[in-house]
Image (cartoon, rainbow, N blue to C red; front, side):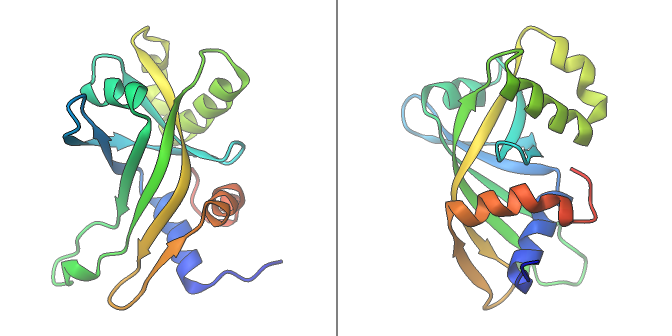
Length: 168
């Protein structure tokens, strides 16, 4: 069994414990847009999975310009310094999943395992699953504790996520 560093353990915990990310996408005119997205983790692909409406501006952005960034962070705690909040900025590419394909089914199952209340929305025609394949990240785990993370390490972390006590 491979021993994880403290930073790897913290990143795994962050990604598997937090269920919401800030998604950064680019509008048609090149201006940035951020929005809140619930996300799940599919260890099979490995990727992050979001479920979005075709009516949302960020969906059009993702389909036209698939390069994205996501910020996942711990919540603020009273009396704790906000500058030391554990967080990760993830870089990736968004891919529309074809309804009823093997990837779609796998990602849907991962999403519903984390958000069972979303099941009725998966039947609506204007909603779709998007896989975000991570290409790198920057982790900040407190003051003086930062690092860049490779695509390979991220894929390994998402694949081995079942080692975390949290469900995804």
